[in-house]
Image (cartoon, rainbow, N blue to C red; front, side, top):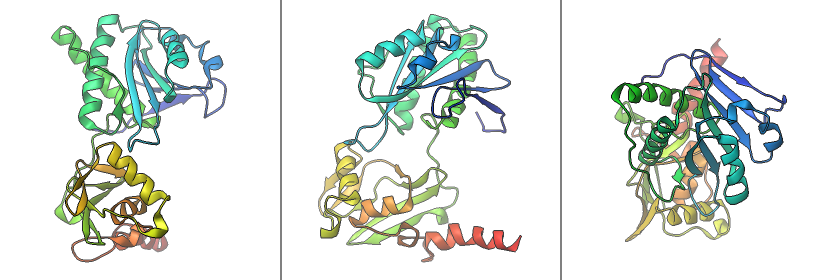
Length: 290
């Protein structure tokens, strides 16, 4: 579904923006309840969680290049999250999605779980922790159409809360939007997006790090990329097997060059203009001219 302007309301039950947050698109019947692992005392009193719903567990693993997610469904989301609080270690924040009108039933959330796992795996922004993918449950075609509409709301709410699990990776509109990072005998290709610097599959990374980078970020991030299968060892260089987003241009160029770098000047377009010249200076000039 094409993105369009939306109004989203976020309610803080205890007034703490780092505690439980309840997000909803004001014209929709689906809401998302974010529960930090340390906020179960606040969460246990929320009726929004004592319902049939879909839930997500989000976490990090220092040995992996991507954040982690586990996707599940339950007839009582609070009870299920409490069980995961006692039984799963990796996660730090959970999001439960339920209906303001109590519309979801067990069959519907099982279908949403199946669809969510499939979409998360396809998009690939997060590593999915589900051991097995469920088979598609049967629901009627009209119900499926309604659930796809609800899923679009779930996508937007998760992204708003800081979990872009179902956001498609941005692709270039024009070839000139591609930037290159060259040095130490390798070449990386990337796009500057709203999420950071997207390094494209097929890009190369130097096989060694400089002495000054040993034990530091360039070496650590490359180890995580290799362990996650994002990078593979091919002949004279490491090669990106899939598109991968770095939060900053410098993080991307550090990983490619195997040394500390300034990504704003290391990334250049076909005309030799730096990322700084193309993306930052025009904005500064426009601001000064106002």
